[in-house]
Image (spheres, rainbow, N blue to C red):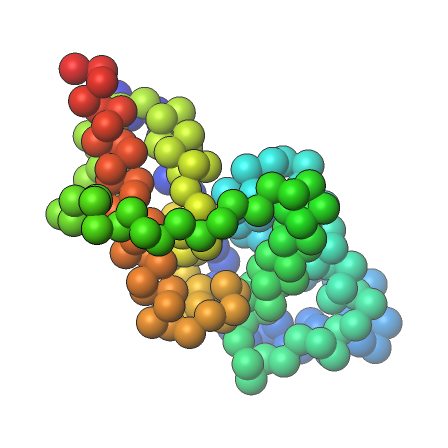
Length: 198
């Protein structure tokens, strides 16, 4: 029996709904912030937790995102993307500040990609093969942050590529490359863990 529980799909708010609530927030309506927090805090927190691997940092990053929205609601532009993407981007910057402060940035190691086998299985198929959810999360945490972020945004949170790229602050092709490499690295780690159990 598999221990891993897939994440719920993030709420997909219509841009108009978010824009209306943000406009009400800009006019000083506290209830608008409460509603926005109720709708968006869960996905932002789960993204930050999966990306940073630290519950305290994830809570701080989520708080930073909503403080930024509350103090400067005009920073959100519905024409540029969803509110969830905006909040996740702010949370991502807060996490980056935490990493820099703790000197835990992992350099992007792209040189060993040729040694990895091509991942023929989807992440879902890999999760079925690996019965221990703790191994999956351990392997995910060992990925370099840019790769882990791509995997979290696209495979776990099921965000569209354009939105995931916006959150990560990269071009779509860069995101796709990172996602491909993340899947390869995850497959290699899980394959090694599966081989050592047998």
